Structure formats: C-alpha cells, structure tokens
Amino acid sequence: MASNFTPKHVSSPQLLERISKPVLIRLLRKYRDYFNDEGVMPPADGEIDYDRLSLVIASPNEAMPAHLMADLFYWDEVAEMADSDDLIEIAEKHEIEIGPESTTEEMALLVRLDAPDALEDLHAAYHAHGLLRKKKRFLSYFATVCVLPKWEKPTTKRLKRFVRDMDDWYDSHRKGRGTRVSLIEKDGAAWFIVRHGETFKRESALDNGQPTLVFYRPEAYDLLIYYHKQGELAIYNSSNGKRERRAYCTYLGKNLFDNPSFFERNDAAKYTLEPLRERGRTALDCTDVDGLHSARLTYLRYRFNGDNDHSVTHKANDVFTGLENIDENIPDGAELVCMGVKLTPSNELGGERNVKLYAPNISVYDHERDAELAHSFLAEKGFIITRNEQEDRES
Image (spheres, rainbow, N blue to C red):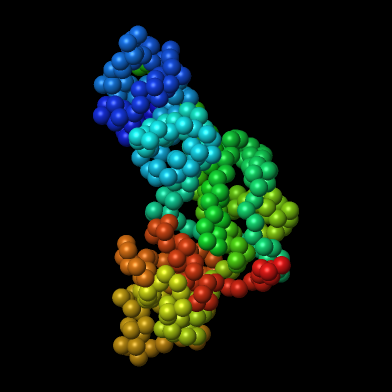
C-alpha cells in the first residue's frame, strides 16, 4: 500500500481543520510513537500543526505502520464517496456518538475508529457499485430445483459459514485467507460483494535506498448477483476462473439453501435472442416494462452452420429500420450470436444505456446502474430463458 497509496481527500489542511480536534487527537494517540517521530503530536496546549499533519498523511513512508495505512486508506476512500446517511446509520447501529455539526469526513473517521469492520463493509458496497463502471462480463448459473424457495435474507451465521468455506477454498488454491462478504439487497436481487486475496506477487523495491524484494498478496473484488425471482446467480469474478465460479455456486448454495448442488456448476444457457426473429421490432416494445421508455436494436450478429464460418453483422442506429430499408429479415436458418440494445429510461436521466448480449450466457453493461434496468427488460421481453417456478408467495 505504501508504494501506491496516497491519501488525497483527507490530507488537505483545510479539511483536517474542519474535523473536531478531540476526534483527530484520538487518531494521533492511536499511533502516538509514529506521529511523535514525525513531529506531529500536539504539545501540552493541544494545538495541532495541520500543515505538518497534512504533509505526513499525504506522504506515506516505510516507517508508517501498516494499520495506520489501512485506517487512512478506508477513511480517505469512504470520506470521498460516502453518503452521510450511510455513515449515520452505521453510527446509530454501533452507538457511535456523532455531533450535529460533524462533517462527512469526521463521521467516516469516527466509524473507522469505533467500528472498523463496518466501514470496510461500506467501502466494499461502494466498490461494488464501481465494479461495473467499465464493461464487465457476467456468467450465469441457474438453480437446479423445479420450484424456487421463498427468498429470505441470509443470517449472519449463514454468511459467516459461506466466508469460512471460501476462505478454505482460497487457501487451498494459494490465495490465502481473509475473505470478506458484504450483502446488499435490491428489488428482486441480492448482491454479494466478495473481497479476497490473489496469489502472491513479487516486485523489486527500494528500502531506504537499498534494493530489496517486496512480496504481497493483491486484493480482488468479485460480485455475485442472485436474482431470486428467476433462480439465477450471475457471477463477475476478476480472475475469470471457471473453478472459482464453481466454488461460488457450490458454497453459496450450501450455505444459503442447505444444498451444495442448488446451482448448476457448468456454464449454462441463460439468454435466447429468438424473440428478435419471432416478434421483430415488437420484441423491443417497452410499454409494459416499468422504468423504461424505449429500446432500439443497434447491433446484431448471426452466423450460418457449415465449414465456411459465414457470419453477418448489422450495425445501425436502428437495425430493424436498416433491415426494412434493404428489404431483408433475420434468416430462419441463422444462429443468433449477439445483440446490442440501447435502452432509454422513462426519466431519461443519464441518457441511453448500452447493453450487449452474447448467446448463450454472457451480458456486458457499460455501467453498474444498467444491470437492474436491463435485467427487468430482458426478463419481461423473453430474452432470459425461463427455468424455474416460484414458490407460492402466500404460503
């Protein structure tokens, strides 16, 4: 962390001055020896040299304790991203006293000092929302049962068992222990954010001017989305490893549903593009999809069987209009491979959303906000293969 991490948000003197002095002194006293050596600890009158403190925080060195680096890292990241309501909720849960004039930065520091695990979970949640800001690829695995059980939020005990199983799996694959799982519930879906280690890396470095080797274990974040109305587990794992995805299927099924075989463990067909061929433009009609104003097909690729590897790609502002202009239809004998759709939300905030599907089970979104909206559209319009029945909600 020392070589790459430079706190930018919480290191300005002006920001530090806006934090209650007793709260800031708690941080200094926690690492008294280090801040003494750096000439930061306040004298008897309690006056803090904010310029000096700012310089020390902004310039981590070899002498900075690892735990202080971790505190600064989570404080800096959450203070920049956080919604104050999230921090207030955590403070109330952990009985952390927050003053009426506390800034977001002060609240984040207080939570870090008094409930460090809670701040790490909040950071993981924010990080998950950033996982899809660049295009990310999800692979889907479906429940093997005929009737889906009624969804209930997993208990802390069940989540801890899931963490323990994944810890054992990562440890056996030379990725170490220390797995953490955070859960975010959304309408019709549960997001599991998994933070874990990767295999050790070795890099050349300088220690007080002398060449040395640094060994460290990189941190990775994976995102598992369980759509409990469809019995689908969509997995984005940074390693893209198939065995890792199978482990997620096994241990999530085991610990959430008491069934290690609850989810398929092989890549299975999730999407069908046949509605495009069967219903044409009407397959994109959004009048019955909440939150969507319109959808248009901008990309379509299909291929033909045989040894010639013949495929056809259509790109247009509206592919169906393009096909009409050249008096063509989607051929009956072609295999539909990929489609790209632009979705316009009803409120039109943020413009159109880009979604791409690769049959049989890969989806690509430009932004994390697209996942829920696109999933509703795809499920409602028949692009997601129906597999399971729902347990009677009245029972």
